[in-house]
Length: 242
Image (spheres, rainbow, N blue to C red):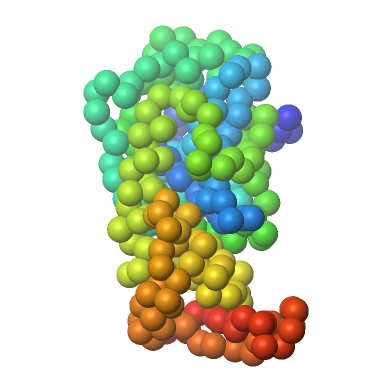
């Protein structure tokens, strides 16, 4: 259970924050050949949700996104990409937020700002799984990794947000150097291919994939790994910094 104090955004009028505007995050990590995302679970409810936050009146949107992301992961200088704005009227449902607040011992009135309609700006983030320290927000019990391939039910339209983020991630796969942000500093070609296959959810031809990646001019080949016989040890690679 989080021991953080109740933040200012829980106050009835949301003083200091932009009304009606939120940020939702799909935070991707890669571990044991699985693509994962961070989810919050809320105490005394069965609700699971994407990490989210609000924009202070004195903040730029991207600065607010970086702040909230650091609060949830303990990391800075993270790859962060805005991918969509979710504003359908049908996404508004005050019941989940009311349940979350009541489970915290807060009884909001009908005009509480968190129960009103919000437009949400979607960001996806790519982080090194081994370096992240997931941190729950003041209303949640935990902030934990879940396998993308077997996600539980999520509150509101968060499943739609995840799917849109994944579609964008697939589109950005080559031009955004996604692997640079999800893999360790050095990796094998097999590691990189596994990441691509996991994101795309389809097998790739080994030789064709290797030719494609080497032709992009983004990889530097290092020494062979010291595992097994020397003739079998795969080369290590790292991404070339621009």
